[in-house]
Image (cartoon, rainbow, N blue to C red):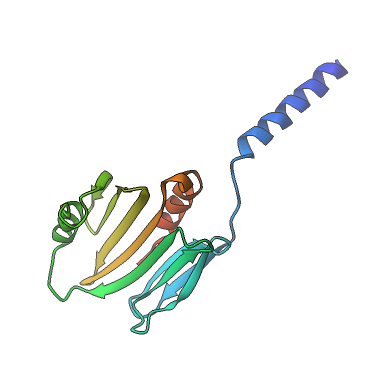
Length: 162
């Protein structure tokens, strides 16, 4: 009976080790923009804030090797565009981005997401329209880094509040 219980314990521990081996914990911090009243969490051990823009609309973040770039910013809807117009503009920019392939897109009542690949880089953009202000988060990273950044991008996107 003891052999069976030790074997069971060993198998359970091995299963836990296998399931958690790919999960890396990151040190997330929150950036809050007071001008446009939005916030977003980012992995501070991977993305380094570059300082808020002079006009206070947002901030740029780079990875240490500068292969990954994240932007977050707000802007007044001075052209009085609908969210759908901005969304359609993002998905129809073929002349500016001939190598761009959109792999995911969704338009909701007050936000949209557009994601895909351009050359060897993955891009992901989430934009809100609230109180006639656009609030946008965009990240771009090398396709070879997608195993690391796909889950990070998902967490960042879910944390984006505005």
